[in-house]
Length: 77
Image (spheres, rainbow, N blue to C red):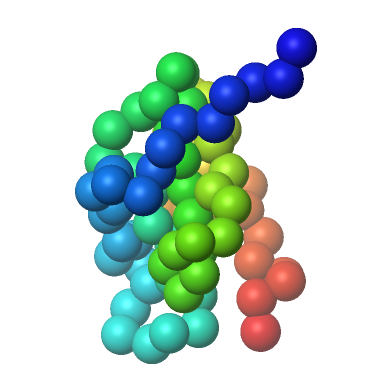
């Protein structure tokens, strides 16, 4: 059985405050959850597919980035 994808075109998105004023690294998260997931997308490409981790994974990621705990930004140049 194939999972259905929610329609995200009319969803309000929140741009990360860590994105800053530049256009290089911009992440947006949907303001509300869908079927136990938090849709996340690249704000530079809003029509591209979004990823949708469970809320617990998204929360852990946001906490790790905010605190620097366990997150190594070695891929960011």
